[in-house]
Amino acid sequence: MKNKIIIFALLISFIILGILVKLDLLVTIDNFMYKIITIKMNDYITYFYKFITFLGSTEFIIFLCVFFLILFIILKKQKTAVIIPIVLIISTVLNSVIKIIFGRARPDVLKLVLEESYSFPSGHTMAAVSMYGILSYIVLKSNMNKKLKIILSSILGLIPIMVAFSRVYLGAHYITDVIGAIILATCILLSEIYIIDKNNWL
Image (cartoon, rainbow, N blue to C red):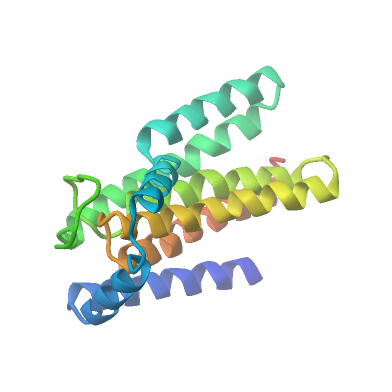
């Protein structure tokens, strides 16, 4: 029951955010946050954020998906193997559809990376939340040492947040794009986890 309430609350939050974005009511916040995040822009930070944004790129996420799919099949954990591509496929399809619906242009700022698709919500951020979120869940459900679980899940949880900041810093997205992506991807992730737990897949 608690999970359903959280999922519903996230969905409503995304809808409200989407409406505000569509009506251009958050431009001031977007511009303010861009200035804050890029206040100390330099080559070293740029190189760092380009590396971080790569962790949420299509190429790297597909690589991780295939790697863990093969790994879990080898370990004879077929159910675990399929949950990663499922959450990623749902996340990717929804992201593509919603981008078209909103049709939001990319920020008119210094672009340190070039992107051609629409801006809302951030695809890199959604992919990162989906991939590293489901991996964190698998880690927490595993039989590994408790301290190791905490360390690994904390690292996995931190990566999507860093990817989100990198997208704003690099001029690829508004802060509201990545916030929307985090909310929507978390909603999808929790929905899958709810189904997994209900059917005892892990």
